[in-house]
Structure formats: structure tokens, C-alpha cells
Length: 77
Ligand SMILES: [Zn+2]
Image 1 (cartoon, rainbow, N blue to C red):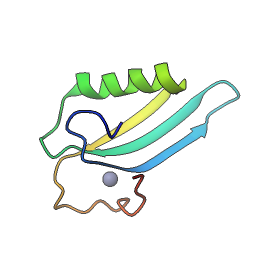
Image 2 (cartoon, rainbow, N blue to C red; image 1 turned 180 degrees about the horizontal axis):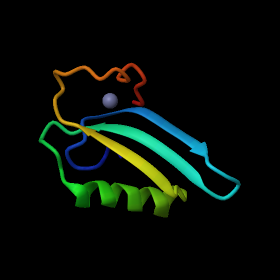
Image 3 (spheres, rainbow, N blue to C red; image 1 turned 90 degrees about the vertical axis):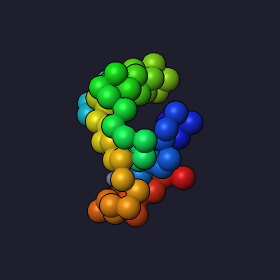
């Protein structure tokens, strides 16, 4: 995901099983260029499903590097 256009940082990445067949994921993406739009997050969710079989992705977009996120210490770099 870090390789995606406009993504500066990823944090609070969690993946867990919802059931024996379904997987959930949450992640925060820092995109300083501004909110990239619903099609962007839909594309990330589709890629997660295709590459990793993740059925339920929740993607939070943050746009201001100067506003600390309470979960920013949980970085995935
Ligand atoms: Zn965050």
C-alpha cells in the first residue's frame, strides 16, 4: 500500500480473522495531497481482496501530516 500513489505513511495496520473464511483489516493511510476519493479507497480494498483475500477492509485516510493521529505510534514501515 505504501507504494500507492500519494501515500506517505501507513499506521495502525491490523489484520484479524472474522470467521474461518473471512478476514478483516483496518489501516490508516497518510495522503498529504488531500482526500483521494471513494474510488481510491475502493481500489485499495479491491487490491487487498485480490492479493490477500481480505474481505472486510476499513481504510482511514488522513491528509495533514501536522495533525498527530492517536494511533500513529503503531507504524508499519
Ligand atoms: Zn491514524
